Image 1 (cartoon, helix red, strand yellow):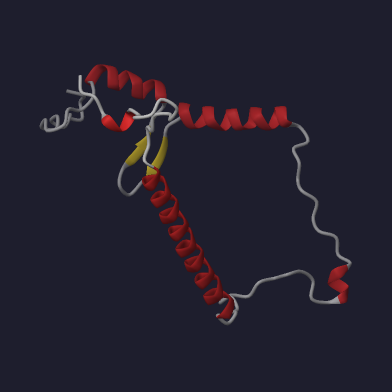
Image 2 (image 1 turned 30 degrees about the vertical axis):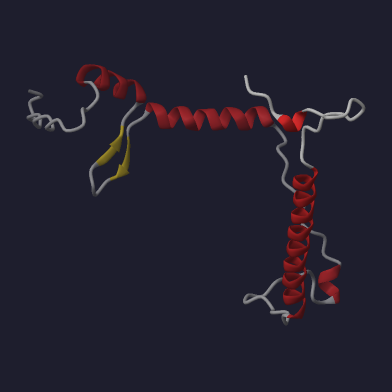
Length: 144
């Protein structure tokens, strides 16, 4: 175990020094210099934006009624749900219909949505496709 002479004192009444004061002072000076530089950069950016001419937007912005007659027209009230239970039931009915019926997704391409139960049956029977495996041979019209 080595002994650091900086941590010991030659006099009995002096406390040991565990840091160098010149390093702390140098750090404080560097922090102050970088803070002044950052503030100068921010001030320059602010002056640059303040001196730039104001550009109008490229598209028209509607800030409200343009005539006295339009000022007296009340805005449309927000449409609130009067019966959330029936709305939820209707949403669920439409979701169930999408999951339980056949429908065309892209008729020209021959893409059809099938009921989810049938899709799970087919997936269980045929399994998931494996990457790099050759595609299965097409089935004949008689189902073989």
